[in-house]
Length: 405
Image 1 (cartoon, one colour):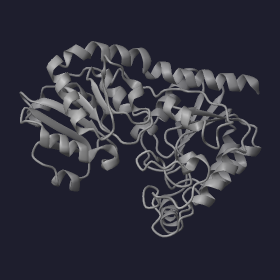
Image 2 (image 1 turned 120 degrees about the vertical axis):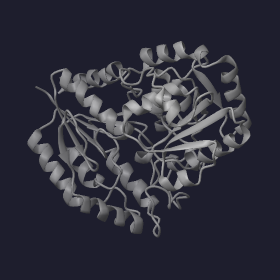
Image 3 (image 1 turned 90 degrees about the vertical axis):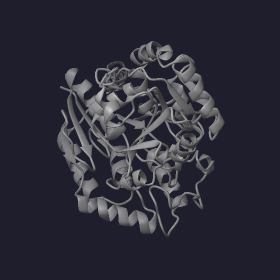
Image 4 (image 1 turned 180 degrees about the vertical axis):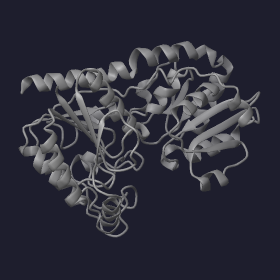
């Protein structure tokens, strides 16, 4: 049986972890042996798991990042042990996801991959592979990544460095490493990122666009009246926001401003907040801490009238897809690949930072009613973003590369 090895920061956790898990499940159903190597936060998986390094290694890598801006260049021993495991497993395909996250040494890994006779697929979930430091640059409007990163304006943003700016050397090293693997194919998950790659140092590497997929057996209309009673939502027009980390970049300030301008007929719910953020919310916003309970998320999507995603930088958010699959229309900023998921029948796109535009879009959907959009949302999600269809594209890609060996 052919063997697949995926590498990601996490397993079966968050959007990238669930994507890797479900790709592994698709591979297993098609007769493959599936492994997932990960850096942090072990969760149950149907694939065979390989833990990369120890928690102590992650902490040391974090210190190296904070002091010297060497993110991706720590974890030497952990990465050498991973390579030992790779040689032991002898995978037919290696599928990379997020390589940042304080767990992997890209110099050691790519020096090995450049010599190994193994096809490499790399799904790009953000922009970290083409910059000298940051994972996103749209919020600050930086385009140094097109030529050469230096004097990074986001040095203290993830992955934060408090002292040294090593962005120029990081950029040069990444360019040399990531362009050294002849068997590499890149998989951007949005048209937006595919176009970004054409202007980056990865422009000459083959690209295959594959959008994210979701589990439409979980994310579907799920009616649970306890949601309304639990959060005292009866009679309210509910606006939902979901994020892994809430910040100005994800539109938290915009949500607060929207809340100020809406009447008491509206109720905002935000999922993914910290305890501190929840304490500082106004009364018209219900705050819920981060959850990995996808069934609870489906219930919240279904109970809501609108999913509002005022993100200022994003690639192809799966939250948009999950909301659509639950029959809830979307309002999002014209940011990255976020608008690509929706059309005029499933939501509204607003220019970034246009609070008046958000308010107008909310009122437009309220006037028409959620049910005006629900059938179109469910249909679009099932036609375009079912995990079985999208992740089968990866299997087809694997097999096309496998057959060329």
